[in-house]
Image (cartoon, rainbow, N blue to C red; front, side):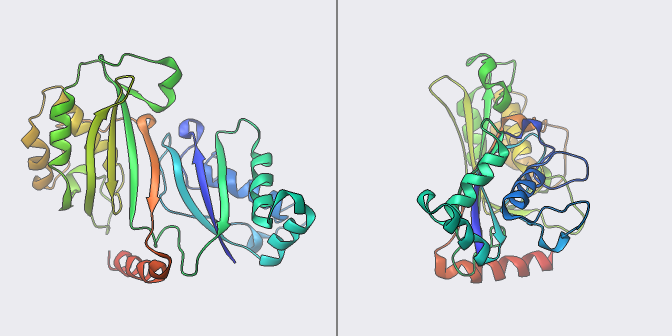
Length: 290
């Protein structure tokens, strides 16, 4: 059976999502916890690599990036899940027990947690069924001031930023475009994306918060988009420059790519259950064409 995992993490001390040899990553930490609970962790006496849990994730976040709404899926033996429910019937279903035990392995004050585990609908693929991803980016400028309690998830800019100009620049970038100027290039991969929402506001503490939603993002795209808006907010670029640089289609040093610490994956959107499989097929075909 396929299960859906809803995941949150503080990315500060992780080297990104993807498992890496001898480096602490979100995927590696979660898969090791799942292996312990499901009884598939390799030992010195017997390696069971084929049974090791392998998570498929909606979006591979970079080192230092956080998430409150990450989604992954995992294929498991339904009998194993059923046996978990039978072992602790008062604790809910087998999936409830699985989530509780994984959280127990991760620890009481872990920097990653599984918020919930549920049976995935037919055709669900955490990565390929997704129709959009939403990120937030937090900036404390001199108007907001520095809050040491928020330092792990907020980037500090030592200037007074013009949020109205930043918001106007952000909104000018919305639509289907080639975002090569805002992406780190990867051989053979397209940089054409549909930016569905991009806007700025100040929260109750005066922190600037970007809302960025797109069908997908290429590498470093959000942090580059935010960097261009900060350059506009500082008066180093005009509002019109943001779209002009995009349309030029080339990477530029006109704006910085901001730090990962301010970036959080907030939410992943999926279509209605009956459209999950067809969406996954379309996305896979598009990636194969790339």
